[in-house]
Length: 308
Ligand code: BEZ
Ligand code: FE
Image (cartoon, rainbow, N blue to C red; front, side):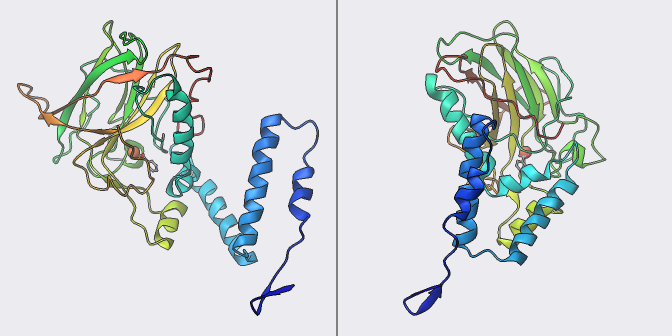
């Protein structure tokens, strides 16, 4: 132990971290070695920096275990925990910077979140995702055109996969009063690259508070809310997939989203819709996709670990 300014400073074994890193064997994959070397170094530095106690370490392990125990094929609590510390948003930013290298007009991405389902039904353009209309719903028509971000050419037969929460703040898989696959659906663009469907003007909602993510927010004296948004995944052969969210410019929490997903270029303006008995509001949202290979990078990977 050394004395610094009269206080005792504990010195830890200077060789320990390298010994752990060097335990990696020669057959380990190169990327695995790169990622794990940095992770071990940062985690060890973190533990030393805060003088992590055994009790605190065990509390962290319990939180991870709790996240695992709460996760199902419809709820991804582990992802939620990473969301409240901004990790998914940071990874999204890293991924987007690569995807957008070919053109600055590529539609910005945003995090997937834990409520995507792989098995949403395909619906026809012009159909509704709103299978049960809540009393306080602002039914809206969302439509737009998909184009190549470099050439501007329309993209036909591209997938637009959409999902959103209802006005009670719950996704259909969280709420037994909503029909299966309410407020979600897969649409395909027509020959001119157009898509369109009925949805709800989105409303703010709290992320689930009954698990470790909610507990962490409480311990950090933070609110649980997300601004009103609609989720989208857009896919087309030969183009980088886009996972994104669009945010109503008039929603609260745009400046302090509990999962840090709001970005410039993702806020949108709903306007009054005329002559449509099914919707009072509309949103025109055009989407531009980056051609694959335009910057030498691969496709933006679709999440494989989200709720399915
Ligand atoms: C969501 O938008 O669905 C979401 C994203 C991150 C954490 C919780 C919910
Ligand atoms: Fe959401």
